[in-house]
Length: 133
Image (cartoon, rainbow, N blue to C red; front, side, top):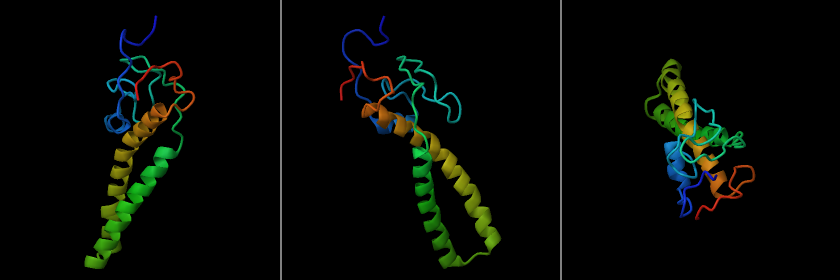
């Protein structure tokens, strides 16, 4: 018995929508994570096997670049505009760096997994899938 619905193939799910919602890249409904960053073994809605997903360090690298760009622009602007003391810089930017990094890591990892699924990266369980692109 197949995990796919009878009749039409799975509809195409936008990788951006799946990433922002941290949802399954095949059905767009099932939750992708079982913890903060741990990927589920399979989708709880469509049964997509997610055990072989490997996003490795890609999401972290993108988050470092994005957060670094945002923070450095803000730090330079604040320094050149008001020249606050160093302790105020630390008080402002360290918590913001942590919040932005943690907040962006989950959707970035989900987006990279959705991109792997969309582009049929080997090992994501899409070899026999009839998803329409």
